Length: 227
Image: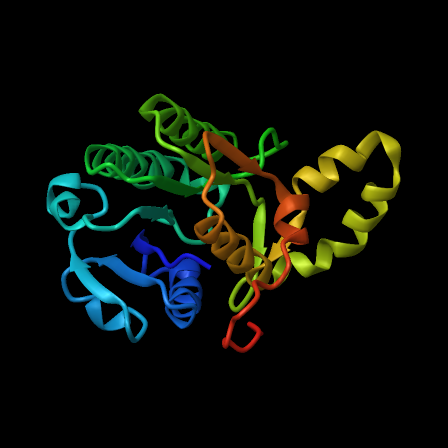
């Protein structure tokens, strides 16, 4: 397994704090972008980069010698009422990350987008679709993951919907939509991100919910399974 130098934007967030320890345990070098005063939230072994994810000028000079950029910045607990935050945070950070990564010759860009199309959260989908467009326009090799909702600590309420999802997945007329907008676990999402780091895309690779769910636990991991 080749070891990578990984730059993570959104390093102190929900996904970042779960992903980074696993990458370090697998002997990848990780640098995490954190706001001033938040460096202490970074997992042990992660090199801090103090900067503003919305302003590429504050972190672009610290990306090298990373070969992989993972963009995890986003509004926590997204909901329909947060449309303006999606535009001001998710979209602005995606623009900053893509521009900074491209300017620094990043070999592989990894982006957490969202399932598309979906019946709700129109602005969220539009913002993430614009992020995908920016990546394609940059010419970078990229892996785009499209989860809908990630189950994990503090994010359990959609479990009430599991019976409805299972029913819809069995009905031909609703099966495709139920699979595309299905639920994934934090463990599945982290496994898919690790696989993306360790198997870089050539061109653009898009991973939908079924692909995220089916990604096996990476080999040679000393990490305990996420609970």
